[in-house]
Amino acid sequence: MYVRHLGLTDFRSWPRVDVELSPGRTVFVGSNGYGKTNLVEALWYSATLGSHRVGTDAPLIREGADRAVVSTIVVNEGRELAVDLEIVAGRANKARLNRSPVRSAREILGAIRAVLFAPEDLALVRGDPGERRRYLDELATTRRPSIAGVRADYDKVLKQRTALLKSASGARFRSDSSALDTLDVWDRYLAAHGSRLIAARVELVHALAPEVEKAYQTLAPASRSAGIRYRSGVEAVEADAAAGGVDSERYEAALLDELARKRTAELERGVCLVGPHRDDLELRLGDQPAKGFASHGESWSMALALRLGAYELLRSDGGDPVLLLDDVFAELDVSRRRALVTAAESAEQVLVTAAVADDVPGDWDARRIEIGMRDGDSGRYSEVIG
Image (tube, rainbow, N blue to C red; front, top):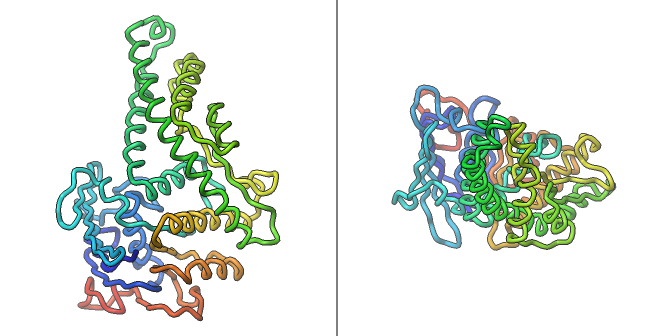
């Protein structure tokens, strides 16, 4: 798979730009602030409907504009697919496939399969559990686009159930049979959708774990062994995470049991204490958790291992994903650079950003595009854009 064309309108700093791309390696070189990262961010957004830099859509729209448009043409096994995505802050995105509108922007998921490496990846090791849950959900959705619908359904239920809990008023709520009946309904919804999301994550972690272990060994052969495991407050999930099994129906029953046990605490606190939004991906080095115990180099190796593991897993599913390397070479030492270069050597398409050309391996046979400003040329593509 490779991206043949990328067009942006009012995305981040770009009023308009059109770039023709090709298989192999392409390096975008430019000083910070000129928009090189915005190019790979746009591709990542088209692949996942999320940014690796911000959690909301508003910053993606150029100041003064009311919408942004990302247009791509993807080539997969000789077949071209045009993907157009319109981003409007505070409203549902609109999308088209081969110029035909689709009902939901989620229908474009799977059209572009990509893996992104970026400086922000350190948050996978050092950040909150939400960073690791997002990593799992994005990867699960890339492998099986239908997971996006599962996530959306669960998020809606979680929002409604949390609102109901927040409206609770102590003993008066707990004695109101109609209110409790309503909570029972939302419990069932949460267990039904939550069990499917958990099952997708557990299944993914089982497949991903050996790839991450191998990647970490390659990156840091002298370090402790690395491991990952799905962690949950639900006993049945914990048991399957340790044993290698997956059972969505059992998770649904276990979630309902746990919700019943935690109901009093949830009513007192006004928050939902049970479900996949409370789970985590545990990262370990030897017998210790990576978070809080890993050195800076070990943290980088673990973050890279998660991305390399994802890349190898997607390749094993069939077809190379597009490899996006956003300013990551500048953050790595020689050995880690070499490992990343090795992974990129066989990729069908690699798109790299760098502030200076020296950050990119000197022996790479790569097309170089400079990001700069030229009077009268803004927005017109050549080997210099900007």
